[in-house]
Structure formats: C-alpha cells, structure tokens
Length: 286
Image (cartoon, rainbow, N blue to C red):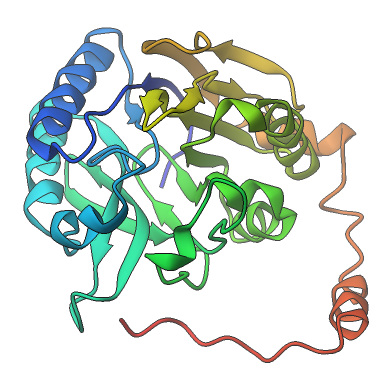
C-alpha cells in the first residue's frame, strides 16, 4: 500500500466515567470536526469509551471486539472517510470475567484491528492487573494511509514494544494514554526517545480531566522521527489539534540516524540470559 503525507488529529477528550453513550457522542463529534480540519486519522485516549477509573463497573461496561460500540464508530469512520483509534475495556468471548485494556482501529472499510495492552501498571494509584489480563504481541496494521502500530500508555516505558512495531514495518506508532499529572515529566522524555530511537512518527493522545480525584494532564503530541515536537495539545484542558506527517521522513531520518542499521540483535539474547531466562510467550487465545 502506498504511504505518504496526511494529517493526524489528536482528540484529547474528557470522558464521562461509565457513560458510554455520552463518550460515543463526543467521539463522533470530535471525529467530524477532525475531518473538517482535513485529518485522515483521529486518535482518542485510553479507555475513551468508558473513562479510566471505572473499577468494578468495568465488568458491566466491557464489550467484545467487534461489538456495538466498535460498529457505531466504524459507521462514523465510513461516513466521514476517516480512520479512528480509541480505547475500550474489551470482554473476552470466552468469559465475561476476562477483560483486556484494548485499543481499536477502525476505518472506512470497518474494523481494521485491535491491540491489547501488554504492560499493566499495578502500583501507586494504578490497579490494572486487578481487572485486566495482559495482551501478547504487537501487530502492525495495513491501512491506505500506511503501516500503523499501536501501544497503550505504560507500554511506552518498555522500549521493546515500540522497537518491535518499528521492525515489523510501522511508520507511525499511535500511543493512547490515561496518564495522571504526576507522570507527566516521565512521558515527555520517553515519548521523544521512542520516536527518535526508532526513527518513527509517534502520535500520543492522553486523557484530560479529573476522575475520582485523579487529574489527567493532557499534553497530547505528535512527534517526528527525529524526536522533535510537531504539534502539542494544551495541558489540563480538552483540546483537538491537527498535525501533518510524511511517512517518507522515516526513511530520510534513518539515513543520518541509522540506529536500526546498527542494532546488535545478539544483545537481546544477552538480556534474556541476564534475566535468568524467560519462557516463550504464546499468543492469547481469549
């Protein structure tokens, strides 16, 4: 598929916790506004369908993929001729007790694919392992815009995820997030590093607003393959900003920043040995 120049909208929204109808309506409105501004891809935050701090409500709010909310947003994508990435709690088709923190990619052709968050923070204010099962694997999705990889929030702390997506051909990595303000400085460093070390575009969209006393800082951004900031949304306020990418820049950046060329694959085995050996992981069957 041809890859080229297009606009990406960062839809930094505040969610109504537990109210899928309100959040679906807001996402549809923001997608239409993004399209009016010329965007071909619009990205929403982590768990944007429900809000982040739903706790035990997640079991009643979760849906399979594909499911009703995926289908509704796919219809918006078809009507507006736009791609959309959004987050939701996914219910396994095996059991309603098995949930995943999932990012879904839809487009004019319908459901393109989905990614299940691999790294689940369970420390300080976070308790994701109480509710979610970790995903396995990082797939790159073919779209008419180009090859897109997806990761979620805490995944950015683990350089292996972005590196794997890049080595599998991603030219744009989308990272959806629900990061509270106390983590802002960490993310601002790591996001630029993930883009630069992989010479890849990175579109980061963070939740905004307050949920049960926890403040989400926003600050969504589009980062170039050189690590430079292209556009940034406001801090602590709902916002929609649009930036342009040219996926050919990933190749141009790789010429004078040849980290992918200079990778030492044998170091991966050395890391495995230093950790005492890791069992191979199989793809999830849920």
